[in-house]
Amino acid sequence: MENNQTQNNRSNVVPLWEKYTLTIREAADYFHVGEKKLRRIVEENPMADFVVMNGNRVMIKRKYFEQYIDQATAV
Image 1 (cartoon, rainbow, N blue to C red):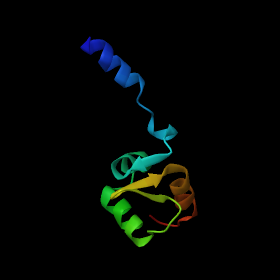
Image 2 (image 1 turned 60 degrees about the vertical axis):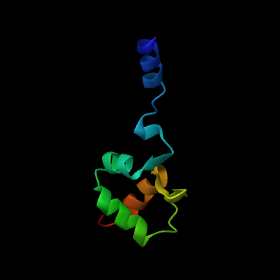
Image 3 (image 1 turned 30 degrees about the vertical axis):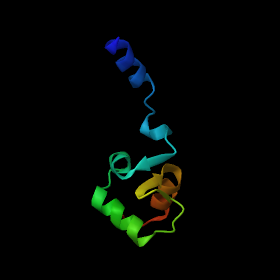
């Protein structure tokens, strides 16, 4: 029974490149930017299109952050 449940959980995992929002840790892995740097970017741009708050958790809108990086000269 445990084996089937484990397989079902693995099949429900959404790849990072398909997620709409990413946690700071996921965004750091996906964009190859440090977590501290991402937190600083969010702190400096709290009203940016790529920032959404889920309670007290910061979430990064993946496509909007991609646009931000495309326009940035340095991160």
